[in-house]
Amino acid sequence: MKAKQIKKIQRLLSFWRNSQPLNERLQHSIDQAFMIDFNYNSNHIEGNTLTYGQTKLLLLFGKVEGKGLMRDFEEMKAHNVGLEMMKKEALDKKRPLSETFIRELNRTILAGDFYKLSSNREYRYKIHTGVYKTRPNSVITPSGEIFNYASPEETPSMMGDLVKWYNKTEKKDNCNIIELAALFHYRYIRIHPFEDGNGRMARLLVNYILLRHGYPMIVVQTADRKNYLDSLGECDKITGTEPYSGANATIEQITPFVDYIANYVEKKLEFTEQILTGKIRKIEETNKKQQNVSVNVRVNSDKNVTVKDNIVNIIKQKSNVTVSEMANLLGVDERTIYRNMEKLKTAGIIERVGSDKSGYWVVR
Picture 1 (tube, rainbow, N blue to C red):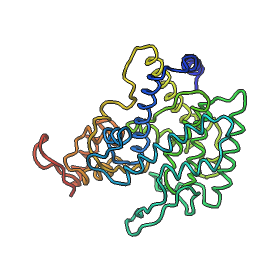
Picture 2 (picture 1 turned 90 degrees about the vertical axis):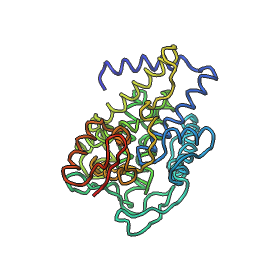
Picture 3 (picture 1 turned 45 degrees about the vertical axis):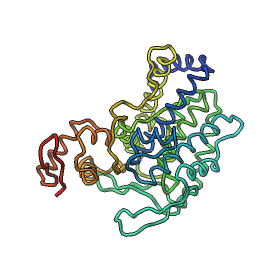
Picture 4 (picture 1 turned 135 degrees about the vertical axis):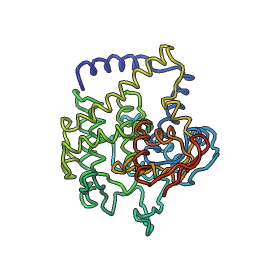
């Protein structure tokens, strides 16, 4: 974080804190908008198929409308329960962060144990929620290397160290809360302690730290998913592939991600200032284009899956999908979609049938 940005954030933060408490009506509006924005975006980043409109209808009125996987509806509701649970825990200053709370939060947002299909689609296996992983988890990098997270054997001690480090660090007078939140997120992700839900957990815990220390909570936009993952990937290049190194990364090693989170905090503080001074009335943070996406498809959220692969996957699920919808679903610009579709057409993988307006796509 540069000195100029730190100074600006401090000024905006002082305005935010001095404006507390907000009047009841405004606070309710801000809380309600954040509930929809955060639940929608954090789940959508991980491939949830519910649209913004479906999320809003479900969380505000408890109603289900349109197409969607039942599991996605269940997890969206459960994630909101987890959000409220996190907020209550964050505001209880007498209670330090604990592994018990983290495990219970994971169990809550995933709505209990469930079965998942293997990557080769040959068998199902049970996901145990609320307990640390019992099987290794890793990803394959674009270069073909295996990127391992902490092993099941290492996980309990690494999580214990992470929580102890956090509880000790947050009490320091010179603690930079934004850096603390970013570093906690990064170390947590490099451990990847659970069999599922780690990304959603990391974003919830970032907001736990921000809220606990008087900052407004942030929403990482699904439209910004690529930049989010890229910033984490840049830090991986610096820290190296060893799980221990990642779980003990220093603030200097994760500068790209600190800058990423700091920019979100700065934007959120600017946003709240505009609301409180009456400059804007729109309280929703999710952009209108994303709100208007009405396609129900599942996107592979693995950071190593290419845009081309996801385009093919989307077309298989909805043949009349538009370029604009795909751009919003994948968090990239429309030029990227057009460029990759041209490559897919040239390779004979996809073909357009009919006109641009009324036609559809076919995967060969």
